[in-house]
Image 1: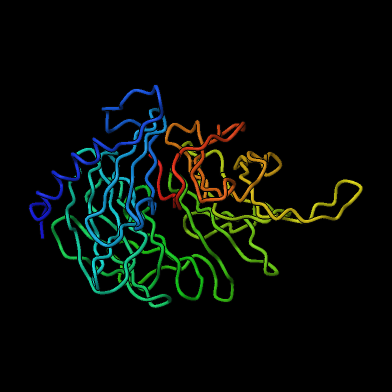
Image 2: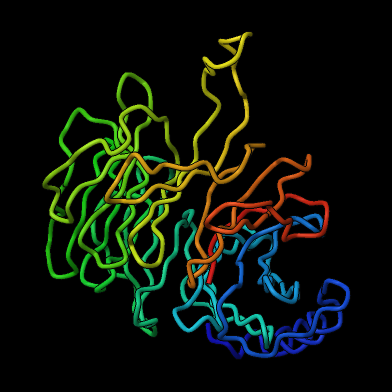
Length: 343
């Protein structure tokens, strides 16, 4: 199936997107599709999940979905298009969506569930997982070719040099596999519970979560699995994200026991965004006051953190200066918004 299949639909959706684009009052329309400061997300604004691009400066929104639902958008390296997962009746699809034209292109179709698509840095290949929970398989897909299997696992992530794919096995070990290898190399040992591995921007380190006494801790290791260590020994952590320069990590701290104050201990049920310098764990700083905040992602200029939060009752997207400050709501409509990627 090619982009021609959606030509009529794309034209209609392109006109629809331009006519119905949501802008904040007084803000200009953004015409440069490659600029940084754009958020990709899925939202059920019209009763079904569609994918959207929203500009952080103008507030302009472009979105569509040619099927029953569209989720998990991930930016192409040039910032002009995204790959996403589509559900059409009994099939799943990988689609390429160009918001400023409304065009969709089908890259792959299967009857099995798909998840975690991501472009490599060249923009010529996509990695994703396929299959039922705990039986997922990792694939790579070069444009115009059939998918190639790598191994069993889920949540794949390309290395910055595009030569390896990092993923999580069903036994909760973190593994990586080069494109020319026939078997993966596991970086964490059997018997541990690890999660959410993320390459550093230079590909030299991996940040991840490791479980100790049923508590998730932020950990670091070298790209070859050596020098594994818990980075924040006294802090519960979730969803780490590297800053673009590789010098900081943003992460989430869920509600913990608070032993300060005359009424201590009390439990704060909220979640907050924190930032820490990679070379000094003592610099960990709370960025938001905490109100169900989760999944922080950096803008590519490193100035902002975009995150998902339930502070307004609905799941909305917010941004906050990376040095701290007052969060500002990004999404203006009342609906469930699921943050996926930031450009």
